[in-house]
Amino acid sequence: MFLGRQTNKVPVRTYGRLSRDGSAGLVFHYRPWLFLPERQLAIPAASYAVGKGLIYSEIIKIEGNHTACVMLLPPRYRTHEAELSAVYGFSGVREIGLLAAFA
Image 1 (cartoon, rainbow, N blue to C red):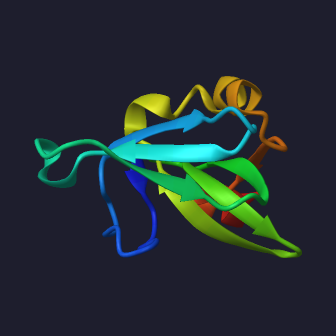
Image 2: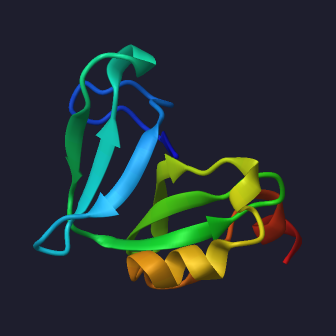
């Protein structure tokens, strides 16, 4: 996964993996410059969903009627949005981008 926005001085599009910690919070594990020691970034607790896009998908934060991109998913995740949502316990799958515009 890639970080979708700058969070706590971690740059946008930083490559890493997402996991749950012991208290059911989300943690992003990444390595600066891909070879330095691994670091962790706690993702704030909120309501999240998987956004299904035409080319790539995202993990989005739901804030009332607005959504904000948190993580960008590689294209290989494109047909696995429902499984990803079930694994992480997100609130479901929503169409984003061009899919949302055509719906």
